[in-house]
Image (tube, rainbow, N blue to C red; front, side, top):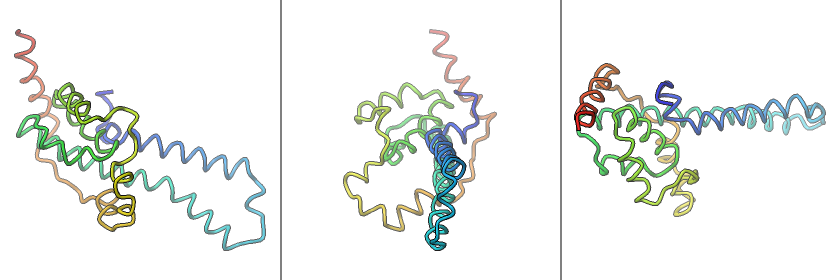
Length: 176
């Protein structure tokens, strides 16, 4: 899993959702041939647009999680693992995947898993916390901008620096 591109690792669940939606779209258009020929053209277009744009939203979210991943790699590289750095990114499974991808790259996977367990998160907690505490927030522009349209983050750390950091941190463990 470590060798997959960080974009895929940071949004693995979102990529799986996109694939599932694409399969459903294929089934809808290929297996249900008759649905396209009923007599309501406006309804047909609305259904067509909704179903064709559905796979785009998880990819917008995956791009945003990749931006979170790059930010977290920088934070972990310069500050080490600190739960205060992770706390803003644990609100949803997708964000936790981005945190975990960054933690794996820098050798903080174990600390990150322990922190998530202490906070009560397990692998099956898929939905964002805000969905249960304040579902109206899903209609807010701040939710949409932070979830789907996060600004591009320019990373200060490159792959060579990450590799060197990981080797540097593993050396004391191997010597012990």
